[in-house]
Length: 242
Ligand SMILES: [Zn+2]
Image (tube, rainbow, N blue to C red):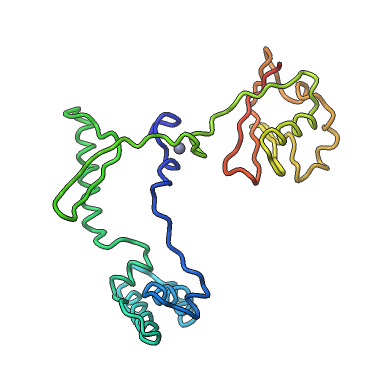
């Protein structure tokens, strides 16, 4: 990964399957699927029976107990399909046959490392899709950056201000421009303004931005970072005089 040039971890999050969760009321009173029975045993029954023992999905005894609890629950409601491997799959949120999947991924990584050190072949660009269901198929695709990625798509932006702008005018301007709720403004050297604690900044409100922050040749030497509850990531502003 090369920051801002190739896809970052956050860019990949869109293709990561969402973790499945079930409403507690379904688990507690109206189970319909084997998964509901297993989650009931996992989330509700285990902590009730063994309040001092944290469930360990890597312990065969724990998994066996969890399976028995789930099976009993399923029998009470006439639900079929609770098996030990399904129990493990639900409590660990995994797909089965993880050992062979890991082996394939390790082999692919070793292959890439070998190519990297020997330059014997071009490197993978950059995602590999392996399908071993009915034969073996491994295709590769580059995974491109997500343009509006919250992390790597969030580059600093230039923000032009008038020389006569006071601190309170500046923060209101930014608040409106980006539809913010209660932003906090700061630089690497400390807070500039915080809407949640506006009283603390009363004295500075009418000072000029150009006096509060160091400017040189029309540019502010410090980057202004703005965080707000309405945005997942921070806003980075490079101030410039009009
Ligand atoms: Zn990204």
